[in-house]
Amino acid sequence: MFRRQTSGSVICTSCGVLVGVNDDRCYNCGRRNPGLWGFAPALRALGHDMGFVPFVMGTCIVLYALTLLASGGNIGTGGLFSFMSPSRQSLFLFGASGAIPVFIADRWWTVLSAAWLHGGALHILFNMMWVRQLAPATADLYGPGRMVIIYTAAAIAGFALSSFAGAYLPNLLFLRGGQFTVGASAPIFGLLGALVCYGRRGGSRMVGSEALSYALMLGLFGFLMPGVDNYAHAGGFGGGYLMAQLLDPLKPERIDHIGIALACLAASVVAIVASVLHGLQFIG
Image (cartoon, rainbow, N blue to C red; front, side, top):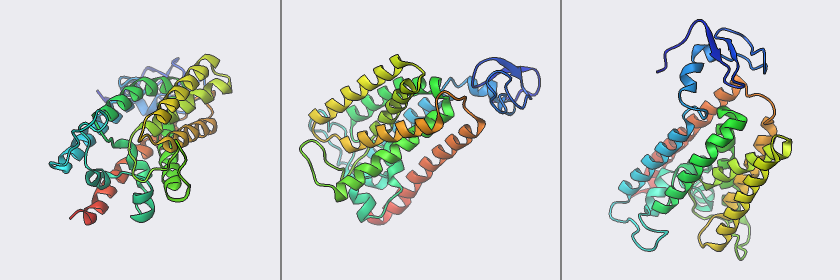
């Protein structure tokens, strides 16, 4: 599958025109190294998102199963939203974020790891459905590398804001900072923010307005349902929007975006591993 092509033509990973596999720059869009050292055909076989959606879904499902196993007999079986919920101890072990982990336990890296954890069966089901819908759409507009960067930046922004609000801001009627929080909804709102940015930047008003409608709908749902981390949603949306502006959706994706995206995924894995290694001292 990942055989390297050393001669002939390939499709540019940014604009889709034929280029030489060894060309330094795409003649159509100007992308550097459009053949990706001969691995462009193999990467395109993974899809427009370069396999990011299956990676996110697979990793979240595996971590959800591991948190259930680490919970032992302390798995939630009560209400609809707490059905099959891992214990707080197991979520803490694998990298839950919030005011308690970040400011009391000094686990600052959990603003990255928390996006890969989930607090129940419905929680992970709905989040994975949104990732499956929004991530490929964002990758089509920004490129897979920039989509991963936006997703990661939104997760960090969302959980950083929620943790800060939980520690230092007063609770309001529908807006409370997270003392203990997990979930992919922060980066999901970041993808929505990136789509809104694309529309306002001039790419497509229809894309922007539809994404904004989704964001408002999900935001309203968060205000109506108890236990939803609205600060993480707001921070994720803002982080995704600002990162999308910085990356400029109307410019072609560059090869260094792919490298940064791989570094983001590696940092996520390191954050989870660091959480487990550090968290073992608190589990007794």
